[in-house]
Length: 206
Figure (cartoon, rainbow, N blue to C red):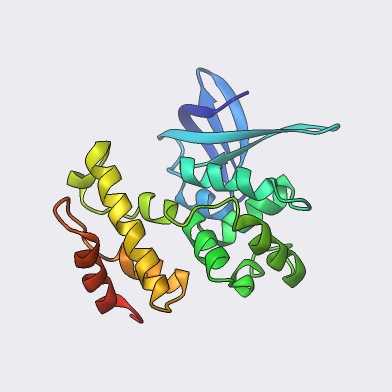
């Protein structure tokens, strides 16, 4: 199993990238978002991968972030969603956009992905609610201050943010509204849930 590739970008195409790892070129299928964000040929790159083995081929699907790969694996765990369809979803929506759509029952957002109809979108929401975690949308990419990164302190902040999201939801706001508002708060280690909640309320509806 290949967990990731770390090498040099040899070529970038609309739906794939060739990564040169020690003189061996690996063809990796990527989403249109990651293809657009891929560094130019000759640049160093790390691509997180998922290997799909079928009767007629072995394919590598790649992602520029571990979070996208994790969500991808969750998507393909849903019956009827194959590797290509899941890649199409992550091409249209980011990992957090998918979380927002799932927890706010926004099937229309998911249906915008290629090959995903209204029926499949509703099925995704139903099944993914038990597989995705709302707090992950806070923990992943939710902190802009490097001083907040890592360790026990980060865990405490994430817990306070998660509680703030739950408090907003209890007040009647949708999970999506609550999450977007809380993620805009510049949280620090000395902030309590109520402090985060007060600031988040200022961002509701913005």
